[in-house]
Image (cartoon, rainbow, N blue to C red):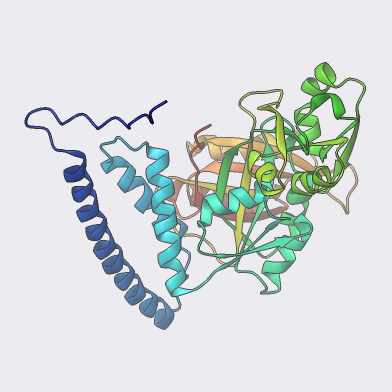
Length: 374
């Protein structure tokens, strides 16, 4: 049988550029991009010198938010807003590293959702420092072993991460940003054979977020909570009768095969992470402020405190109580408020609350994150 000759590409229609001509234009644009990126990096280096002389912070979440919003508003397509955002986060990350190679602590090991959230916020051009616990993330920043930290604070299905809330009570750190990330769980194993599975392992929150799927599909399988989804994936890579609930990225990192994807019980499952740093963030124009306060244990005290925000037309997007450790059956309240602490209405409300409350701590004002694309 004679060999099959490859078909020649059809000639371009009259007046249309050829493939070679289109590639030549792309090459020309690539070179222009390099020149523009080099020019941007040179300006960032100058900015870094000024910051160093004046004591300015290298990481400026409000400024970075402004850049991303501006380029997305200018974007005519065909790239999506999410794609434009990811490209510029990496550009900003690489240029920021010219000023200072930031070290970012997160709840490890690598390939956890906390790791993914850290990459979403800081890009790839930082030094990532996985920590064994949420408390260790706080300690790494407080002791100067990391510049920033990323920890989970609440999940749309399972609610708040109480350990994070408790650690926020005493820390001198500030919340300087947030990341809202869709959580897409996969069931992963070494062989990818669903009939071989005898046990399913994952972080306790992930197991809870998939309890309906597990009850319907693996009612006779044992489940075991582990310190992280990545640790579960690592274990599944060594024990063929074990399946892990983790992200697709974790499965790829540990050489696992996907038995099923998107197994979370609620499709819109998402986790909110907070970014911790040593100094407050500036205003971005689209901010959120998180506070912690306590009021007298008497009728109407909480209503009076919350009324201060209503009178100043400040939205309360979340409020949650935590027990006062030193006073049984009395509570601290965490609240997320619309605006920056330096905005006049919120500043006025906080000053009044400080006089009326037993205790008030502003945990941070920071750019409010927009929900990430699913």
